[in-house]
Picture 1 (cartoon, rainbow, N blue to C red):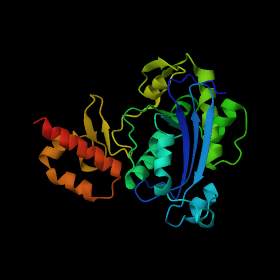
Picture 2 (picture 1 turned 30 degrees about the vertical axis):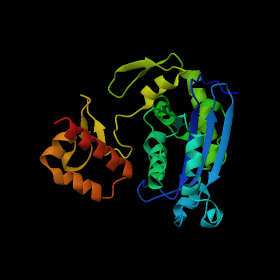
Picture 3 (picture 1 turned 90 degrees about the vertical axis):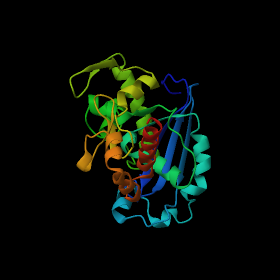
Length: 269
């Protein structure tokens, strides 16, 4: 039985991949710990054939080699069942906002399976950890749970550890106020997914971080020659920039969000 107070299931998950490039790399293993509002949990772990060779440097980290996944299903083969398993769940992980969620969304987009995040809360235990105790998952597990993390970089071991770490963080910090990087005091830590989402969510518009909200809440580019400029203004004054991004090596999620902004600007004229 877990200690989280939940209104809906919270799915902790971790990915092992061929690399860290969201556009080019693929998932080779996914593990999900679904924490249910009644205190029970469900664990599912699946290896996936990425349909591309796993680089040796990646295999040396997570211990999964080409031979291990040659008979495993492809992501396309498991996508619908996975989406169903995650249906109605908020999402949690360790560095999940910057890597695992963007990678998972990209895989779903590639195979044409709907996976909408608009009504989901996301909780990144690493964000809380870095605010309170800047270290890695192994150190977090030892600090909050008093145990050594065995089989690190195994998707299931890392996922279960993250699940236990978040519970340990809440037990330790519930009611404690956080001071952000600008010295502003936030609301205290709560055993509440919506509050944890607000605490750990970033200002990014797309998961790759190419677009974000500025201090005024405006949508701006976050890279290159238009860094810091309002997206709507750039698209109005330089229409070719949109075409360049759509043809470039940007994640599908980035292109989709950029298209949404462009269409919204057109309807507001």
